Length: 607
Ligand code: M6R
Image (cartoon, rainbow, N blue to C red; front, side, top):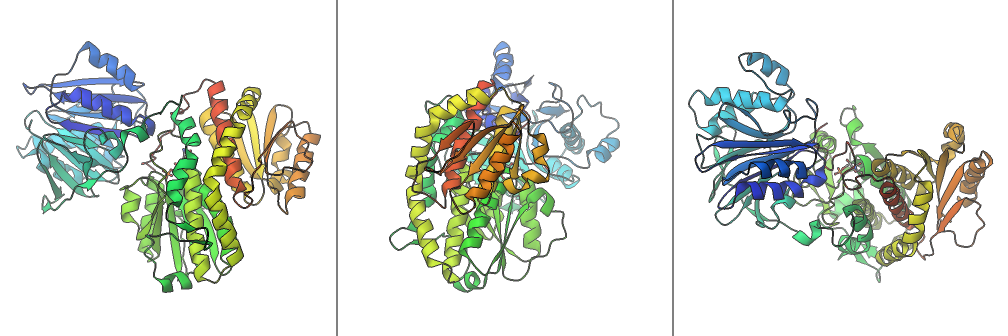
């Protein structure tokens, strides 16, 4: 979603702002802009619709010379995708970039009837509100704090004024802001990855905090302007992790590097010899683990599907526990009740998804313990949960989530293994799964490399279709859902995932020669039933692709990709790897913007 950057220091601000904005491109955006203050304290503005490269062209025509500035990538909410609606906005001496939504902007706008608004945005209303306070002669931080107290909604903001060229003032509520502390320079961003290469020391602003950022100093306050103690933390990761490393797209890189990233997820958490798994950081006492009776898994999109797949393993592993998996955007508004001895797993790659964060807060209000299954270190969800774990998949730059899915499922599986042990669960199964986890990185690598070319060819064949159904049973069902999501996200093909058993209850009506059907078929006790669905589709002229781990069973389909792997329980993850590659190559065939698919944002920080 929208990205914020800011810079004050010795370097030319426009260069730092443009570089940092490029690092945020993966979040998804439709326009961008920067505003700087030159050394004579004259503000300069550049905005453009489209990619940062468009903005660079605007800047090239009229370069900015100053050493202070703010920048923004906008994902439109209020007002269309136009240059005038792009940030930064300014009213009077207030120059502002904003992430989030000002929910009461209409009421505020009505109060500001003397202002001649140029844009349709809620952000410009906020700028006008701050400006009204500022014209009363107070300092910038006072004006900002006063204005923010009037606001209902969410914000991450960075503001400067030519009257106070010695600092940028920032604040957050529900939208992330990180302040990089450098040598004689301060860099502001909505995502720590934008700071890499400039500094490793960062202050993560909390909700309700405001900071005055100068070259050599950062002062943090609450909205009553009481000074707070803030500590810089060390940012993890490095520049190489956020570069393509020789691949054409981040999506392909992130699919292909899963064997390595999974090693990080597993590291120190499984003991294949003892046949045990252990996930640190959950902050659950042995007693709490033992008495646990109910697990609710919360997520959106791919994180939800990861939870759904993990829930099948949890039920198999822990006999005396109920597991429910919920979509965050629904659950947050339901009158849900969680029984005693419940725990909530809050699953999020970014750790910033607004709906998931809202659920976390609702669940905490009800007194249930929350555990994060989060990838981005230092993210809001990671900071607000009672315990939990980082999945250590590394930065995921491509908007479509791939390696995070694998890591999330595995992290939740290790959690389940640990709970199962304390519940006297099936020891043999815990051990088998532990052995499979140990083998999984090598099997992922083997699967991807063995089938990459075949999948590329398949993609060429099927890229001309416009509709697809993905079908799977049992643990292959969440994989079918995820496969359809991945395909639609990056290829823009219409794709739906269904439980194979549902085929006859409706979707089979769609089957004809214009659709193709992907069957995820596991070599297990439901094999014959899955094959039944495949026959029904073929009998009606459907074009079928089968992804399966059945090596020696007769299967009739237009195309079959057979895994050859000793992995059984975790084979759904390998089938998913094939689907990830398939979606990638179909998108490439269709000439799409693979890493930044239209209309999507990496981190969905608005509702
Ligand atoms: O950052 P999160 O895991 O909380 O994001 C949840 C979804 O927005 C995300 O998985 C989305 O569905 C992706 N575009 C999937 O590829």
